[in-house]
Amino acid sequence: MKRLFLPLALSVGIPIFIGAAYLRRINDPSLKGKDVANYTRRIPLGIVRGTLLDRKGRPLTMPEVRWKVIQFNLRKEVEEADLRGLRILLGKKFKVKPYRYLGFSDIKGLSQEDVYEVMKHRTFFRSIEVVPTVRHKLVCRECFHTVGRTTSDGEGLFGLEKLYNRHLKGELGHVILKVDARGNLIDEPKVLIYQNPTNVKTYLDIDLYRLADSLMAPYGRGAAFAFNPKTGEVYLIYSRPGPYDTAASPDASPLLNRAIAGLYPPGSTFKPFVALLALKHGVIDTTFGVGCRGYVWLGRRKFRCWSIHGYTRLLKAIAQSCNVFFYNVGVRFGPDRFVKAVRSTGIFGRKFTPLPEEVPSRFPRKARYYGSVLNYSIGQGEILVTPVFLAVEAGLIGNRGWVVLPRFSPLDRPETLRVDAPDWAYEKVREGMLAVVEWGTAMASRIPGFRYGGKTGTAQNPHGEDHSLFIAFAPYDDPTFAVAVVVENAGHGSSAAAPIAAMLIREHFGLKELPLYYAWRVNAGVSERRDTVDRLKLLDELERETDM
Image 1 (cartoon, one colour):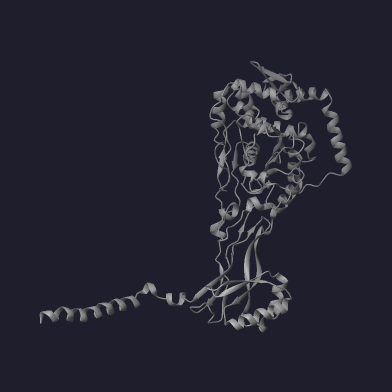
Image 2: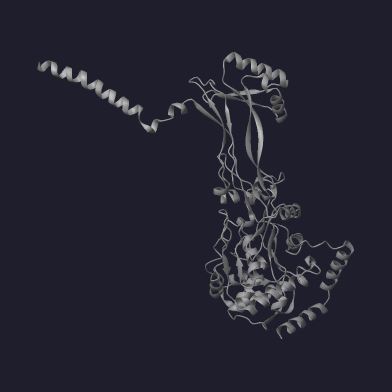
């Protein structure tokens, strides 16, 4: 009896255990629906994302619907008959790429005209179907660096596509197929396309982009940034070259957004900020003046000015971009004090836009030697800034010490940046920047009947020709537009960057062009007045009247 107990127990217990395990398995809720998923296949139709719009509601991006031909897996003789009929209909050869597990094959090598022809005769085929594919299309090619692009999975890769990915991201459309174990179709296909509910309206202006692109085309490389310093609304963030510029070489870094990631010496565009700090810290006052002979000596090294300006005070120094004046300011500061004064403002080493690819501007933590401060005072040396930094600098001075940092849409939270200095110091610097345009280095870019402040800059480039820079705020009395333009290897700031900035200002404010004969008379008068000695005397008299 004992010998029979163990076999009897096993013969009864094992079936009970197996049955219990089987019942538990088939009643497991986590497995519910997996039998359906085993024979359900999905064909992705493409990415559906929200549309980016400019300030006037014009699309920067939009979904583009295209069509493709696929063949479902049916009986072999049916598939071959349909393919023969398709070749006869189109009169051309094509390739068939099978996806047997997914239950269909792609028909490759067909144009959209061929696809439309298949649509007309769809009822003659049993295994052929035309399905839509959705592609995310960039409408404004000049806006590439701002808008960015998406991955194949529909995620924003950089630019506004990445910044607003959470709002723009849509669901993929699919063709739902039911197939058997061999991948053959067993039911009618279903087409599902999901629409994204959210579009994002930005502050950008397509007209400014197209104008900047046409003006920058002769130079090949450069950037421009424009925004409203009172609200932070970004109108323009342009970079050239881009990936669509066929003449651009890979060495030109066409994917680099130079407006926020291109680093340049600021050159003379940094001088208004140096003047503001000098007035704030009491290094100079409004009566301070120097005699410019075209150079100064520091030890055995000669630091040159671009011209001989004679006796120069602050207004004339900014208007005529006198290096000697600012050399003296740097010496009065001293290296350590100068570096400390600049870094205490907090504008270096930080980002100004919410774009993740922005690169902060750089300023040295200490001067390497005493002569460094002379280079720093004219915007040279180890100082590297981005065009967005220069635009914020122009907005700060034009707004008398505060600016709302650039933002691209109402989805971005406003942030205010302040640089404390006396109101009279800001007014003196603003007057100097107005003089730059009225009778200074940017006089050729003056807009009759419209006042704005600006500053030209020529940044030394060890790798080639100097870079041309210009910053401006407009209108002068109540600025709502701050702009910075950098043109690489274009020479002086007054020759390339300043005219481009002036045209952008004209476009933004809707100012009419000058008649040709009047423009010629103004430019002729400019060249004549530049060569007169009496004009320098007039400048000195204007400075004395301003100081009084």
